[in-house]
Amino acid sequence: MFVTILIGDDRRELLNLNCKLVNFIQHLKEKCGLGFEDCVDLMDSSGRVMNLEAKQHSRDLASSVLTERRFYVPLQVLRDDSSGSQEYVSLLNNYSSGQPELAELLRKLSHPNKETDRKSKRRWTQKNKDITANKNS
Image 1 (cartoon, rainbow, N blue to C red):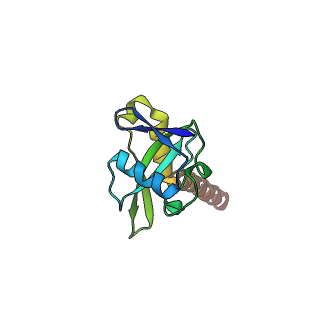
Image 2 (tube, rainbow, N blue to C red; image 1 turned 120 degrees about the vertical axis):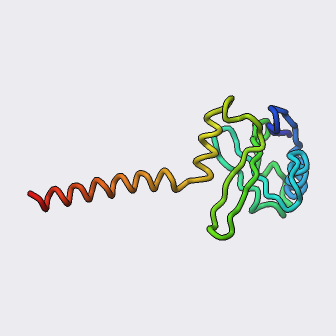
Image 3 (tube, one colour; image 1 turned 180 degrees about the horizontal axis):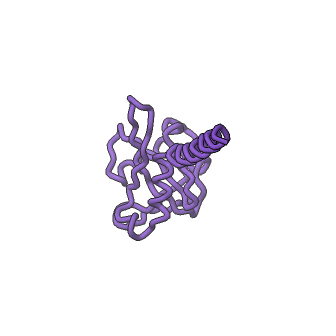
C-alpha cells in the first residue's frame, strides 16, 4: 500500500501507507525539507486537500486518510494569525508552467473568497443599477 508524492523538480517518492499517520506526516516533512514546526498537507489530482494538519497527532493508519496508488502534491500551509487566513504553497517546483490547472487550484485554495467576492460585487452593482434606473423612471 503506497502513494506517490510529487516533490521538487518532478521527483517522485513512494511512501508507505501502512504506518501511523503521525509518522507518515513527519516522514513527509523530512522528504519535503520542512521543519518539525512547519505545516504540510497533500492535494490529490482532483484538487481536494487531505487536511493532514487536523490529524497530525493521529495514531490511525495513513491508509485511513489517503488512497493507495494515487498521486499527491505536497503543500506547505502558511497561516496568517492576524487575519486568520491561510495560503497553500506547492512543494512541486515549476508547476505553474507545466501544470497550469495546479496553479489555478492553488490560487482558489489560498483565496477561496476572492471569486465569491467578485461575483457578489457584480450582483450588488447590478442590483444598485436596477434600483437607480427604477427611481429615475
